[in-house]
Length: 415
Image 1 (cartoon, helix red, strand yellow):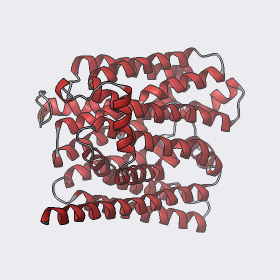
Image 2 (cartoon, helix red, strand yellow):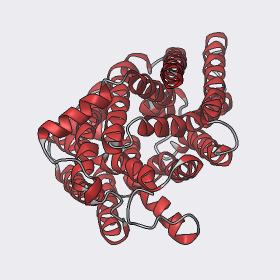
Image 3 (cartoon, one colour):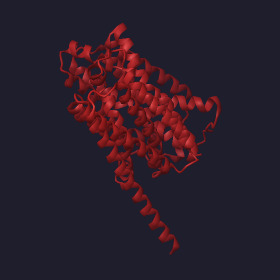
């Protein structure tokens, strides 16, 4: 253990810590997914086209990616708690501003404020997990957090749809503000400080920049970061095009987004549960190999079926999304822990750089690629398949590099 805080290993305290860390990670998916059902109404009120409304996601994702660079190193320097508390407080204010906005331009600006701060819980939360736990225990907690976190994308559009229908789209952002307040208060009362002063790095721009650059320049880290990000993009491209899929392709209404999100989240949940069960029973990279194999198969079959059958039955599409969700959760915790373990003295920086890469990939997927392909489900399936296969290739390159480094170390030790 790396701090004076006595980390719980079981019971209500352990589950409470997992639930809080999962809640901190849920801020981002709630900020992305909750207002999907209100897209059409917001387009009408502001008089913008659907591609312009899509930029409310880009305006959120880009600041999210770049701000993530700073949260981890800052948490390495001043501690985990203050970074989370201040970040969530600013997020809450940004959400309230979205409620009161009077123009589309200001909405984009306040979405940027949300994006710049929504990732603080996800980034610092990963470092907290690795502060407290090691080996299979760390993988189990990461998987449990993923299990709880997996509920968010399913709940968010459903909750957002009903809030929008009952109270209008501004109330959806009011709900986000309420979530922010709840997490600020709960974190202030319950979140431990897991990074004690004696383990902190110097609080200077030069030191923090040097550490971050050392992380991002590591080739194995970069390969793993892009592999994890592209793996998730294989699913995220469907989440990012949810309004078009649900309302246009599937012909459903604003309260039926669960038809798309439920199979994804069910897959995430099953995959996270499996990851927790497999922790300590099989080698982590063996688990990742299984996940990659399932994802590559599911995405390839989806693409082939869309080519041959049009329209493809919704149930078949849901089943393939379910399999992809399982695969993603088998891969993601393993790759995340490996990246954190590459830099044990700078876990916050490693978590930040991982999030930075993942958000860049997600921003490019949602802001650039999804608008180009979402009108055609075959093209969307092609994007998903390309993402997963590229992720598989990068992961294999990372494994070869790690094996080469281990071999060189072994040769040096023998001599």
